[in-house]
Image (cartoon, rainbow, N blue to C red; front, top):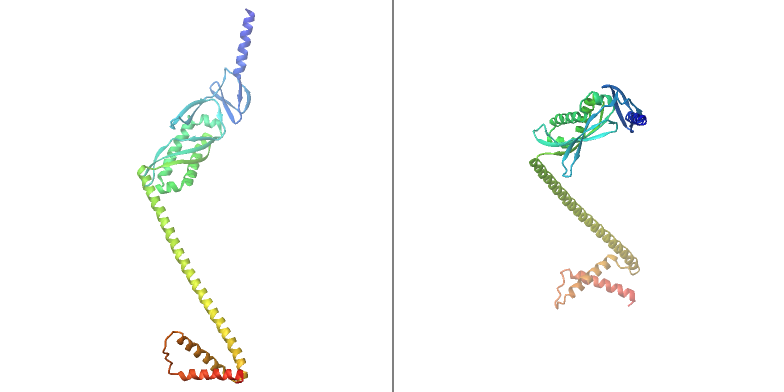
Length: 316
């Protein structure tokens, strides 16, 4: 009998000691109350408490999870440990009204961190719910000051403004709000349809402007190419004429130099060649009758000049 009592006593001692040993993980703390009053905050590590007098303070916490259908479900849990890491809270979609009376649904993400566990437990009854309600009311106030267009184009400013408001309001709860992100903005269906039509019209407008600019650029380049081609042809013709003139000049100089020996006027020689060439073209047309111009004496004079030249050259 005595052995049985000893074993029972030893078991009770072991259970008592086991209930008094608390292991706190890294980045967590435990609030200990002694006889219903705050006693101390246990950091990470192994700690001993008096089971009968000391107990861990339970904390009500809530999470948002998605079920298999994709619906957001709120899960309520009672925790006896406070996580000091940064937490993210996904708020359910809520209805807000803009300054131009457009109703839309917005859901947001809130990143916060508990910096003072004592305030997070004793300064607010339900911390997650309080943060959610505060975020919802602050979001309505901020969006209510903006128009629909500004709501879409001012996400960063809305996020920063919400963060400052929430960080200041939750400071007395021992919470640090690091950032707020507007995750999704859904205007009514008729507004979405109107916005899509406006976007399509804007895209069509830009496409037409780009097409017109391209056609204009094409015409300018074609005109510039034609102008450059005409300039190139004109420069080529001018260069060709210069070369021909230079060749004729050299030819005339050579002929003049050669005719000095025979005492023949170079000008008369060139005129005679021109007349002979013209007369040859008249004869090559195949007509039996050839009409000579009134100034045929000039042609005869040219032929006489050529005959004198050949006579002098041959010595006949």
